[in-house]
Image (cartoon, rainbow, N blue to C red; front, side, top):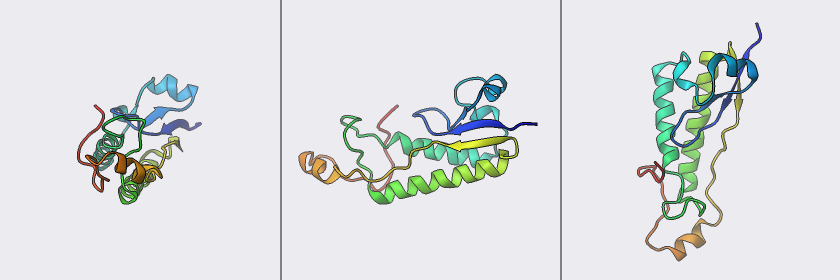
Length: 133
């Protein structure tokens, strides 16, 4: 039996697994398919934690402006993402090829200059306040 294909990436407010080929699309349908796959509770909890973190990533004043995330927060996010995809591959990798299409974050090179222009904001070392709903 041929494996299905799943695309792994986070979209704001939804899941992280998406049908990646026609066969998988016929089987699982469109949209995020996390909820219909047999994933463990720890994987679902990690997915929720990453979704919350990602909801805090965009600039709160104007989303296209630099994210306020520090390099250390970006590193924590990236580590969580790497851990999640590893766990997903362990749990369902026999049935699906998982294509990692999730962007990894890095501190925006424009952030220091941006913060000088916006003294009411500060660099974030923790993801605590969603900036998107």
